[in-house]
Image 1 (cartoon, rainbow, N blue to C red):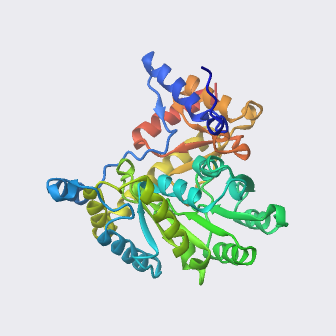
Image 2: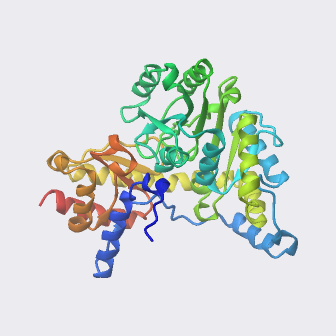
Image 3: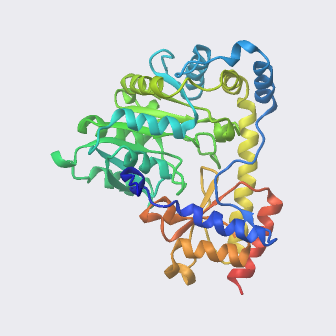
Length: 392
């Protein structure tokens, strides 16, 4: 029997799987490949968080089903975190929900808010789930070019055709932006909120890299804009700020109708995170702010070393103000190859794995993304390999 699965056929093969395959093949041959591809944080989770997890896991009361929207004390701590960080008031009962990482929360939120055929504005390039969540929900995508910076992005948003047939249901944003590392100021969100209010759609803002900012830059929350909760929700992942990637913990806050919709759909799909993880998350949000600057400093040093090293190899790349990535235009002599073929060459000739920009969308081709997930010694080794390749 030959089965067809129309939804799966809409999802193209994961471009990053090609690079992963080549990386694993090289490693099986005994080659040392430095993996700067996947944004998988390598730093350990702070001890107070781990200690609380262990303590809570030993209590049999925490082994039962939990609440899909998060235990009450966690939602209270999420609200306190927003008040402390952004001076934003969040009602823990109606405006906050815990999620199994931002990716799960984002995907289910899109599913809860749209109908097949709805239009969703998504950045191009973008973190894959930011566009494919809408594809999975049978929506049509309106691509918002983001690669040239916030002014050009806002200009493109203003100039979208908002005729009846093009009326969007959602706008997806994420700043600091993965993969391009574009950062915005609060004024960008003020105009985005004003447009959303005028046009009658909701904004989902993914603030995954809220804390991974450098050189004095501080990333704003969209909810700092007056009246933003009327049209916006914000996602946060604890993967980066607290090095909790494998814990799969995040949350969504803001517009109470959207939060209620996510709460309803999650009640059918899961019983919430393992309760000890939620309890440990309370400790992260309440007691571990002092650890975040230490984590950020590690990424800053890696960023500076990579940028300096690439420049010394003749590859001049801008230094990002945010995220854990470096977004690099493919060198001119390789531009005709495209990002995927160039990424293959880096594995073969430099022993370095990166993410090809085309994997993030059509406008990402011509770029590759470095993830700052190896220590400085390994980054120095990567630079030596890249230098030899580019200057051969």
